[in-house]
Image 1 (cartoon, helix red, strand yellow):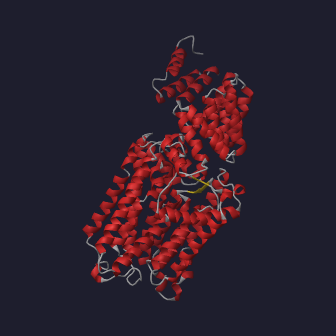
Image 2: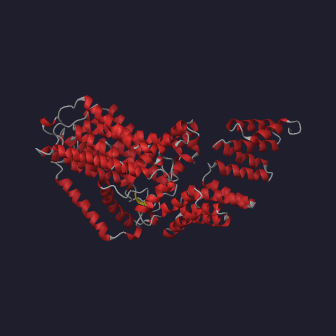
Amino acid sequence: MQFVSTSAAGTAVSAQEGELHPAPRRLTLLLALLLVVATFVVYLPLRQHGFINYDDNYYVTQNFHVWSGLTWKNLAWAFTTFDVANWHPLTWISHELDFQLFGLNAAGHHQTSVILHALNALLLFWALRLGTRRLWPSFAVAALFAVHPLAVQSVAWVAERKNVLCTTFWLVTLLAYGWYAKQPSWGRYLAVAGSFALALMSKPMAVTLPCVLLLVDFWPLQRYEKNGAGWRLGARILEKLPLFVMCAASSCVTLRAQTFEGAVNPASFPPGLRAENAVLSYARYLGKIFWPSKLAIVYPHPRWSIQLWQVALAGLLLAVITLLALRDRKRRPYLAAGWFYFLGTMVPVIGLVQVGSQAMADRYAYIPMMGILIIAVWLAADVVSSLRRGRLAVVAAASCVALILAGSTIRQESYWKDDIALFSHALEVTSGNNVAHDLLGLALAQSGRLDAAAPHFYAALEINPRDEMAHANFGYFRLAQGDAAGAAQQFKLAIANTGNRHMAAQMYADLGALAWKRRDIEAAKSSYLESLRLMPDQYRANLNLGLMFYEQGDWGEARRYVEQSIAIFPTSAGYLALGRTLHAEGRDAEAAAAYGRALVLTPDFSLAQQELRALMTPQGAR
């Protein structure tokens, strides 16, 4: 498979450079191997890292659908759930497969992400090599991408599997499109559409890919210059109409998912504020691509502290670069292609539609930075090709840049070893970071350092008194201190300040548990019922509600909720409760079977063993 442009400005070079002739296959394979080895070496420390308590819990460590691995039921769930405010079934399937293989061994989950990142570097190298016939610039772009510190968040964060997985199918789509462009046919177009669908099912950020294909038509494929006026822009857009229809469908589903889960909150971020932050963030992303320092897991939104002069300067910078790229589009088409690739692929995540509370995120630059790296490398290659001397020095300088980036990446990885290191670093390099304060407080509390945790919870709520996650975690902190009333107050404040269905459901379940502990059964039942109204597929809430009905002697209601719990996620505790309920109803044979199922799941479950032995004795059976 090969797609090339033989007369492109910015692509053709002198025969003396050897770029117009196919490079020896052995050299290409050697460079590909070097990419893979470099990626694995740089990310080797991840094998020692664990999960973090920020989204990893939703995606893996506390997600019972993922725990039960690849089953038909979980596959169906992956395609129908809006959990974590997204529709990305392939991402869920990848997590289920990882759990099937590695369980809660974080090293295996991290290794999968590293493999995908290495594969992405290879695919980028392959796509550029085939599209431009430039071996060394293609390798340089892929190498910089592989070791760039901005990629660390996407690779080191298990919850960001969606990003690296989506990029894999994104690059496969580009390769398939090059194959199609060489000799258009329905079969080849289906390959493009199929790989694009897989990208969308990994992460909806791929919606910009049809527009990227229009840029690829411009450079490096130069399809606008071929076949006369009939193949100009209008025809190229029409050619991609089915892909745009897929984008529209994906966007509707994504907006529905994010609205349903309360991830979109336009009232907190008016349009003018979102536009200002978007312009400023574009400039900041550029800065972090060229000078990747002070990287953090979360950057707090500046809200009303944004200065107009900052927005004006950022806007001026973007306008100047845009004008330069357009002015030089014929002589150096890669400038316009790379620049508009960067601008366009950022659109879904730049904050015009605000999702979450962050100003920007390193993970959002994973795909867009490819465009800037292409510009930087191709400009450098043009400079090198015009030099008669000093080429070796340029190559040495480029190698030094790659090594410096690799060292910075290894250092950035070190902050991801655990929650305390990660959020402590975030507080060192940002200000007003309520999320980092909250999650550092939680990490310290979970490690038993309650005195050290308290100031961080207070700081988080001082910065943002309406931070529902901080209220929830502060509630758990109060509970650890033995202050049940204070915990309940914080859980209620979390409910009052959240628009997230899952968060509210969890808080109601926690309030139910507190009420049950103080033997206020009616309040507990009311809280659990509200929790299940918001989120019916909670196996623990169903089980606890069943146990309360059992205590009250309502066997029918008890069995109904316990059976619902088991249907959602079978546990030995669930089967024990079912056995006791069935025994109370006089259905001893079914009760014995339930105890047996509990022992299959947990062979040394002493309570189930005792109940089964009692049932087998003459006085125990009915």
